[in-house]
Length: 298
Image 1 (cartoon, helix red, strand yellow):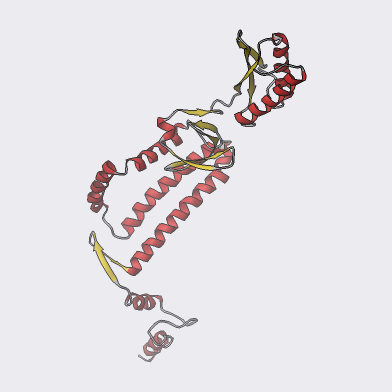
Image 2 (tube, helix red, strand yellow):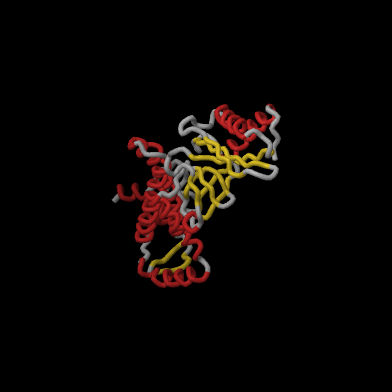
């Protein structure tokens, strides 16, 4: 009996004035949690489960931890695991994103069931969500489904140079609802995913092969045709971005009147140079050669 009193005294003698254990004292964890729950506030009940301020904090902490774990898992797979299978960055990003979504879905189900929430109670919420989709959330779900289509079909991937209406740049990231494109001016544009499904998209590196560039040139009608053709080919050969194979070529599009229209066709690698930059460099070179031989532009 004496020993029992001593143990009880040891468990209670280290408590502070408001009943909480003092720092550094030997604490009975169950007793500490019981006293902490006495200060908890009951908020509401849902699906037969009572929620308090403490339980909501625990639920919020679990959700934050789930997002952190899913993001960490994606980065680890992209940077460490999938690299060993010699996959390109776009494929690794797509697989990592899909794994992240699966982890989030499974994690949410586990968290809700652990919290004592009956998932069948969300039938009403799902019905209301369906009505919301019909009235105002079509674009959100359309972009999400479009993102999944892009990840599975992979018409574009991270690192591709694309042209979409008046947007030209490199795909930096493909998210659930939007795709991040970095333009030639280093401006980041967030493009809704559904635009890559319903609009015409030019993927310059889809086939991983060279792309042909057409440069129009107009000269005075009295110019020497053979000399102009030679100068255009020399301007193409002087540019390091122009490929030697397939070789450059020159088309004479029109004759007559006060001008002749030529077109210089060259092949280049879009990953190494932008269309706009190469066109500018060729125009500078062509203009210099034409002026050096007394040929005027029309």
